[in-house]
Image (cartoon, helix red, strand yellow):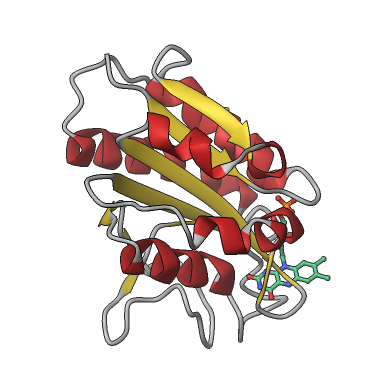
Amino acid sequence: MAKIGLFFGSDEGNTEGVAYRIQARLGADLVDVHDVADVTVLDFEDYEYIILGIPTWDFGQIQSDWEDFWGDIGSVDFTGKTVALFGLGDQFGYGDYFLDAMGMLHDVVVANGAAIVGYWSTEGYEFDASKAQVPGEPLFMGLAIDQDQQEDLTADRLNRWCEQIHGEFGLDTPIVNLDD
Ligand SMILES: Cc1cc2nc3c(=O)[nH]c(=O)nc-3n(C[C@H](O)[C@H](O)[C@H](O)COP(=O)(O)O)c2cc1C
């Protein structure tokens, strides 16, 4: 069975928690979870299907471990790989920079050949600007999670997005909905 590599960075644990909630839905046998603080570019070579998780910090900046890895991720060849992204942010606290880092990561992996799945509607979010929004479209470049302002919506969003990417990855493995 082809495995999925999930790579996350997290300062305060929110993105890490969401990473393991995604793994719990798609299956621990299927999804290998990696903290990007502990990986090298070689770890990406093992996977055809990849999930990337990134929060935005300090007014539109990349999370610190992703920032340390930025030169490396820019050298990964994503040709032939399918990638889904999820981002964490705070839409009311940082509405001019909501999820910007997810947009920046999206642009790097697209430039390096990735096919992207997991686009997500902007409906239900309030923000003024986001680099993670597809220009001119009511879509984010990946799943948008806001643990600061909409924590109660996260479980349902994860259920629906995991169903979506499971189909888009073309998997026939079991999947579960959770109320976590
Ligand atoms: C000082 C500070 C700056 C932040 N800057 C942004 C931002 O520019 N854009 C955004 O969407 N969220 C921003 N956030 C919200 C974080 O992305 C959010 O709390 C996220 O869940 C943190 O994830 P982590 O615990 O995995 O690091 C900021 C939060 C703090 C405390």
